Amino acid sequence: MKKTYLMLFSISPVQAYIEQARKTQDLYAGSFILSHLCQIAIKESKISEEQLIFPKFDQNEPPQSLSNRFLACVERDIPEGQDEADILKAYGHSIQSAVKKTFKAIAESAMLDSSVNYREQVANYLTIHWAFLPFEEGQYAKTYEELEQLLGAIKHVRAFAQLPETGRKCAICGERNVKFYRKNENDDRIEKGTQSNILKQRKLFTNDVHVVGYKHNREFSPKILQPGEGLCAVCFMKRGAETYFAALPEENRVEYNPDFPSTPDIALLDALYDAHVDRSVWQGKKYEGHVIFDLQEQNEDAVRKKYADELSDNVLENSIAIANELDTEKVQPSPYYALLCFDGDSMGKWLSGVYLKDSQRKNLKDFHQALSAKLMGFAKQVRKYFKDHPHYGHVIYTGGDDFLGFVSLNSLLTVMRHLRAEFDKLDVSDFAEPDKKLTFSAGAVIAHITTPLSEVVKWARDMEKAAKKIDDNKDAFALAVLKRSGEIQQTVFKWREGETWIPDVFDEIIKQIRNEKFSGTFLQNLDKEFRRLLDHRDNWKPDHINVNHFDTEARRLITRSYQGPADAKKETVVTMEHMLNQLRVGSKRSVENLLFAFGIIDFLTRKGAICKSSK
Image 1 (cartoon, rainbow, N blue to C red):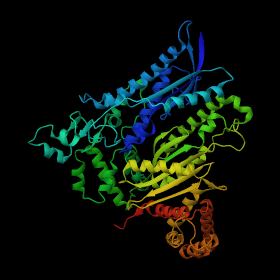
Image 2 (cartoon, one colour):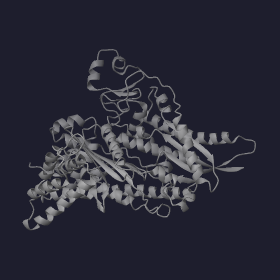
Image 3 (cartoon, rainbow, N blue to C red):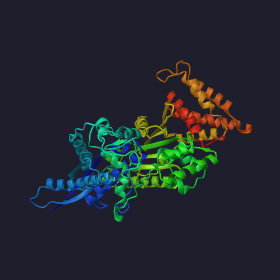
Image 4 (cartoon, helix red, strand yellow):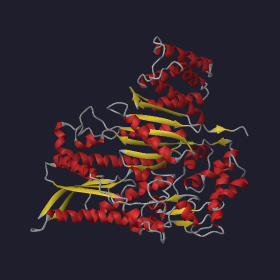
């Protein structure tokens, strides 16, 4: 007898696996591997497109980013006399086994033929949950709610394998023992004339480590394992994932990028675009951004020596040629870049049907499929947007209601505004209450290329959380700047104040200053003057100070800083006053939040500009 079930399948951990990273390639590989595992799970489940509820996509053209779980209606044949639970367990375990087998295969391809015992770390890493509930038409909403609760209860009972490890911990996750280590120059000197295992005894604290030579080792290039770097098997497999994806048969081939741009590469995008450097060079990743920035502080011979063993002759020569071209064009690249993330607001309530019309709550399944299809379509648009504008940045993942990607500094506000405006076009009015629309909240962090990537990722997530705390309705963004000096500025706004997009206000103020209609000193002076008047609670210290005093002083400073044509002064000053007023109102009466916004605008004006050097 055939029976229908609602099935929910989940792979974890997600955020930890993706975001425990030292290099941009780690971030990208973690996301790509998890998406691939979810695709394997869906394929192994042998469900049709009609049975798959979310994520909803054409299985002949799977998206590059998939979430860590899927929901589907499945049919199982339950022969008379056989235990229903056993049949469902066998089905669930078959999907789970396929996922773990693939994860193991990726690890084995990355480790090559290493004799080190890494398999236990890999085997114990993934946690996979799945649940089934009998499903009858007309009972979808009730069954879905119970299924989510059931899977949540299963996740709260955390069964784990004890894995006692004594030894040096991984440089990325800090959780598991080092299994792969590359000697640095000092290690080579220490081991000369001593026992061969002295490094393992004194520095790695275990013999169960695959040690790679400092130079001239063909096993793993410095791109995969840097001198002095020690990684566990789980983190190392992200570095070597290229081997697995390159070996897939043609019918299963996926578009894995083994040369995901580094943070210096992202920071350089504005300069490369402004200097009209040949796109085929920088879009094809035929250069190394670290070389170009190093050439600003070191001579060419020193840079050549530094990268001689790490880069191919072609990449090194291209990088030096680009640096010379930027110098000829008198373009000074900014060493800052941005990391942007967003997440759909109240998606749990949307999926549970809270925001649906009363008449549509019985059609929750149709809504789920329609919503998932729209989100997958949006994700596809986002990838196309970045592909059409290669100087804007690069996507780590985009699942429709969530996103993580690197953005060039000059493009940040444009990208933020565009993505949020396009998300507005996702129309669910056939299902939703009239006053409910899909929204997302975003977090962005601007950082120097020398800032540890793990810190940048943490700040991006913290900013996303800060945006979601603005109020119960959310629909906000938070922006932070991590200056190389150590100073940190952060500000939070709703996306819109009335009909005006706040990122557009930021952008227009920046343009006015860059076009030399105003000196940027008025922003710095506003910050200096009014920060002195704040107490520890972000209130004016003298009670008589109010917004009228602020507006009056802002008008005075704006007028003084005007340096455009005299006949346009009055109108231009009024426009600038209006924009500052929009920021003040949008800052929800938090004075420090407003002053930080001024500081960030001033920073973007100066650091985001493509500076023409005086050479």
